[in-house]
Length: 175
Image (cartoon, rainbow, N blue to C red; front, side, top):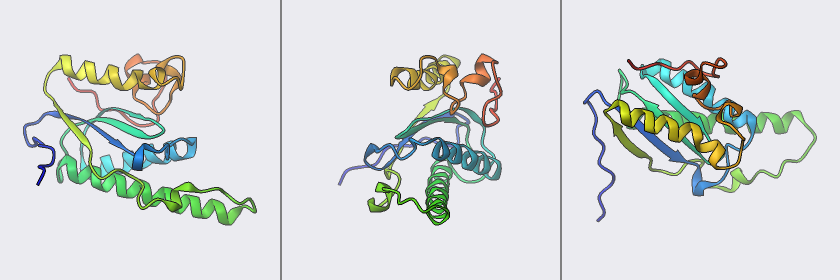
């Protein structure tokens, strides 16, 4: 029997987490889907009391840099976040279909789930690692060719750190 990933909690570290859509499909490719993800992330953060230090929402995966929550563990928070996002996107998809006469080719309904089951979690305990992980997240859309500069991808915390525009969601700076 293979052992799952080792998660180290309750040390006050930040957690760099990555999770993917089912079979790495681009289920977050649309602007409405990414906006819904960000809205749900904000709600879950408020309910569970964790610091959101950085994020990027890509078409088929998400990176978060979060603190440990007041309630539950990072694993619990991610489970709630993923369930809430998939439910909300499913509800919105059904409502949109009812409002229009257009038939949508909806591949997600054929999938057994929205998210891959597991997630990657890396404890971030130093300033050097925090900067490394934030840079990695923020450059992800440019490396993938989605935008020319990180400032052009609104579904990330880049604008907060660049102090250019207000991000879509409040970021909690770590001192």
